[in-house]
Length: 169
Length: 352
Image (cartoon, rainbow over all chains, first blue to last red; front, side, top):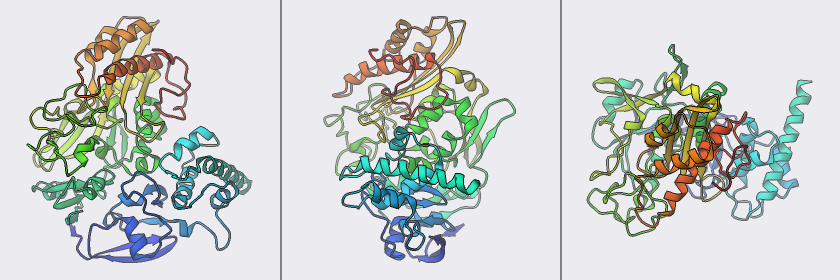
């Protein structure tokens, strides 16, 4: 049974192995990313699991990083907004958000994009606009760019589905 | 957030030993607990992390035809399990109507059962709340209480249990497996949550250190699969707790109801089974008149706890709506807006 004081965490963050020493068990994955690893793309909105700005992929699944205790996730594989592009080539979801004006101020955008990537990976929404809107309901946009966001996710879903078919062929 | 010790036991026995001391709390995903800790509503001295305990993340088919769901199975994983969704469609629909995709990916089965009320006065550490601070009073009684309980409440507490998942589970006779210092015991889910009485600080029947390890549905629960729905009215389309919800499950043969199951959510400190309403449907034709009578029977004992008399009339209609949707048949696929009364579906009674 391990006390947490001075617990050392091994994480894979955006494909890179990272080790973080924790001197306080209270730190969330969100704070760890922003304050310890200086990955500030993941945003702190409400910090209470209500807005989705802090969405990351944790072991391949989208979650609210503000409600994940870092100490509990030793060994985790984390993908943040900083890790989705391939060099200068945007991820198809990023490109779709630009093409469809899926943002205004941009604060919620990293969470929206991570959530959209998670949604597409889950494969439950397909190209049904209503299922996409429902599947994105955990991400609030106070600028109200929802129309563009929903179109961007739908477009990216089509692009990625076509890419999958091409790869399979 | 207060400081706490963090321990990660390797076995259930170690976990129980570590969590039996006063001030200890189990941590699973933390989607509710960390929120409560950030607000100072919960202040555990020790978190006992159960997420690495072995064998609690399985969905198992039992030899008797029932199903056993480990306490660490994630809400989304269970809802999207094709076999589970086919056999227990109302449970899958309830799961998918709860919270957001991010939270469903993290939140566990055990944690869902044990989540705390979302009463705003429970969360407001500056106010009086008998559940958070026994004996301090109840600010909800004279406050904003449109969404509070209409069944089973007491002068001490009018909070509701917020789970969607628990509502069809109670209707389908789910059983909770609990492990403690004295071994393992089974408890019907219907008996897990306590009504507030004079001691609203006790949400449930768990003893110190007891851990929910699994949830079981009996084989009989799958016999309702062709006619089982969950309906949930929210104040916005998605990502909101229920104002009122209802699970309805029917067995219909030759146009006659053989068996009915009904439970309500958002109305009491526990998911609320309605046995009288169930009994009166047996041997009736599945029609609007029968469903209206069942709705009335389900709410026969209801009384407002504040500015919420509207919830009684609303709950009657949601019960009738859930029964009508169940009678019309479980859809092939869960609707795009799970459990929404505004989803277009056959059998919907828009004027019920």
